[in-house]
Image (cartoon, each protein chain N blue to C red):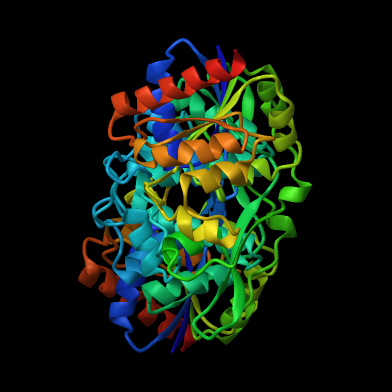
Length: 319
Length: 319
């Protein structure tokens, strides 16, 4: 079975771990969001790709969900001693090595997809990890600063430095319009038996991937069922601050509103949490097959059960 | 008193510490060798400039004479886990930060001299540290490999990986002919009251600085006395492997041969160690005023005494 998954960072990575447990023999291709990539200290940092790679490769800091396990921060301390920031982005020493290798390879002319493959040679994530594009796309967030001035900040600045504490007025994947899907992306979608949207952020993770011209269309036209899992449970994000960026695109933070945001042209099936069972009818009325099942990724087994439900729903759709 | 010092790495840096103790009110400008600079992992590494900066700024690893104190090697371990080398060059985590800042600034368009000034803002070495040039110069060493093939290797590869274990057939500062002295270098030489050659490697440290067109000429034409300290004591280098590269340029490893190599057109005075007192007459016959004094930099006070002897000899020359 060939499964394609559109993944953001922590939520996507944890879902993938469950999916691998649920479908150990499946051929899984992950299309990773690169809109939150950022250049820090002259180095190319790809937070979402790395979170997937570290999580599936056994190198993740389990508690925080991003960054390396057993991490130290000596390089960062020294950079701060030089007065070089930003200090709000927590790059650890072990993590720095990944960005150094990536930057060196990219400076030598390798595209991000080739670099990602080389990094995965070490981590052996057990999936094919593809960046959504080899082109530069940067998600910017339009905000109003403390003086009432409108300005755009990099998504990481909004998310990590500001902790989404000011309203997002718009979310713009800068460069997406000119970006092309990375090699293998459209081919994987066309060949998929199932396409899954994990409980990732629908705007800045899955939404950014869908903003690369050709990807949304390829998914809509694919013969495979497309099933998503709601990242909103009980009208609030399970983790993170998805509600802030959903507001920016005029979408309510409810499991049903997110399904409608993706739309029946794209989604065939949608899983909501059991606490949102009252929303199943609304989603189905919108033309999307819906089930209410437990959606809390408390551990690998619970997550694997979610993945099995998604695959079961995909079979129902297909039938 | 304005003093100009041509410095390599460890020997130059330790001498400078003694000089600062001997002449605390002097205005010292250090012209640093950059011929052993190397790009590692895509980062610009300047071993000699950093050794001077760390030594005078209190950040050096005192025992080994290079690199940072209280160092760790987690980035390097991770790079090795990615299969990315070289592993023979020991970049520590704290040291990496220096190279990251330097590389980021240079990528933004700053010349090495401006970057060095910015790094020194933190370290406050108490001297003006200038790279010999802002242009790229790389010292290469011609060797014969195990198969008898002649090839050129980067100086660091010869020095650190091969530990100078194969004969050096030639030492070539690649790029030196096209290099220009960095801003301030010729001005400092012209304005100097004294010019000192510390007991640094006469070929790959001081020799490389002199290979930048204009620097040797400026020193020869300067009104100030030029005094050097022999790095060869008892016909062997005090530290390092200077004998290997002296052989490559056809110079015997003796205190007098090194003086003759610099030449009376350049040197006005030369200090040899007391064990080489028998060589004083030979040096003086070559037109260079010479004294035999203790030249072992065992501690700061012994080194300060050497610096005082050099300054005294300069006064004698001037009188």
